[in-house]
Image 1 (tube, one colour):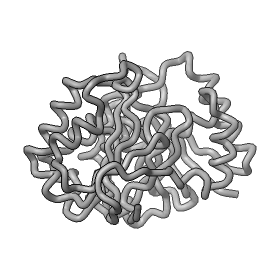
Image 2: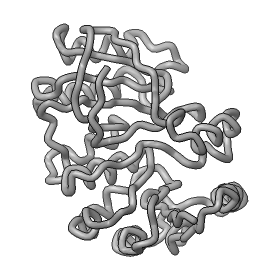
Image 3: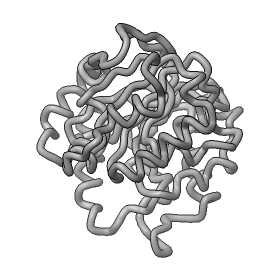
Length: 274
């Protein structure tokens, strides 16, 4: 039996999501897992499921439990970076547990990597119980080789190799200027987004250029940019990235990493060759 934890380090879950979350818990148990729950999952005080210290404490309870192998964050939103100063990175490095989350949890995954060298998984486990692809996602989750193999296509250059960092572009940039921002030298920078059109992406890409990101990384990985794609924005994200990153850096794209309910997982902190 494997022990797994469920936490919500970003915005608290709304009460109406309880049935959905119970379905996820029951599914995980059906696989033979023991499920340990955070005490800070649902909204208690406005959007908060607890103070930053309380949410961090619940996450550390999972990392400090020697039986927990995987920690699944089911939240998203804006609040995750509030917990970063409250985490015990020495204990996290020693822990066997691997942290999973997406969107706003980009901050936690990259902070853990920058402070410990420990990998994390960019993936939302609630895809296992909601959306049009839940059955396919369960197959992938139970056959991990299928989950961790997003297909990339090169759109600039012919190949790239390096350690993956990044995730949601808006949330990743919350770490800029802090000790939690990962070293970008020789990395592959993964970028994806849910909200935002051309003006927002222009702002984020300008900031990445201004902090020297495109001079340091060995390649750029582009996942889905949901709102841009839904609105058929022109220029598209590839054209925007080329404008800011130049024409010499390798760029690859995938439809299989991002906020879509059919998205696969990618490991932040793992070396990847394309």
